[in-house]
Image (cartoon, rainbow, N blue to C red):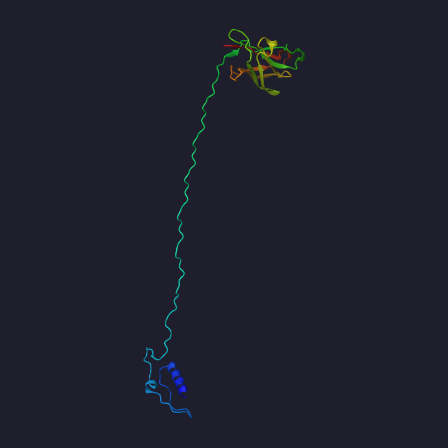
Length: 224
């Protein structure tokens, strides 16, 4: 019975601090006197009863906050340390020199004649021939004679050597221009070189004729 009374009192205390409604004892129950300090106790306004349960007042606060503890900062910057710089410049060290023009055409340059060195070919031949003379009028051998340019039928880039065509005299040369007679005007050039390739004359233009009796162009040179 004492336990029942204890739990009843406890329930009333928890519910509030008002006057306990003990007026009559329940039938067949023992009388129980409640101390006046409990039956008459009330809670003052805006105050907490010392015997009432105190609701929790704390606010849950996170114990750990995820906060970055470091910031990634570049510590080095790549900078090229070498700049390519040209160290050499090509400069020609030699200048080609021109040999003195030691030969000029003879006054009768050129002479047109019928081919007498190859009479059997008739009109099926056209060429240039002649000699080169020094200051004493003697033929000079081993000089290169060049004929370059164009004809209506072909391009010309031919060489002869003085001393190989004795039909035209001592030290004579011959250059075959084609197997037919063709007329041209100032499109062919003749010049003389030594064996080292140095020019001994200027390049002189000459004409050709479509004439079987003028298919040999004789061009002689003399020293100045």
